[in-house]
Image 1 (spheres, one colour):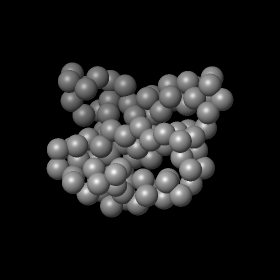
Image 2 (cartoon, helix red, strand yellow):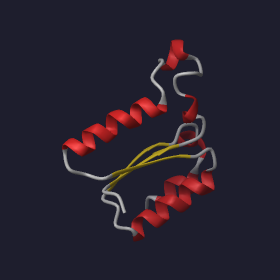
Image 3 (tube, rainbow, N blue to C red):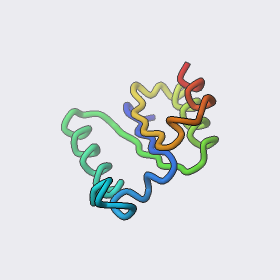
Length: 91
């Protein structure tokens, strides 16, 4: 169990390499390292997941409820605009 679950959706594994002039050169690993350091400073555990598959993200959110995860931070990427199923998972 983690206090904080950070979920990154489709294509976010390409941060830093895909159109860096628009999205910047910082990789997903760089973002995770920054968040890991912040969570350690505040004595919180953190878990990172990136998936290009919507069903994997939904399964993870559902299981995190049973694991008593305190907070979920999600950047669903393109699923923001298209996924009613993902939105419903948070209800």
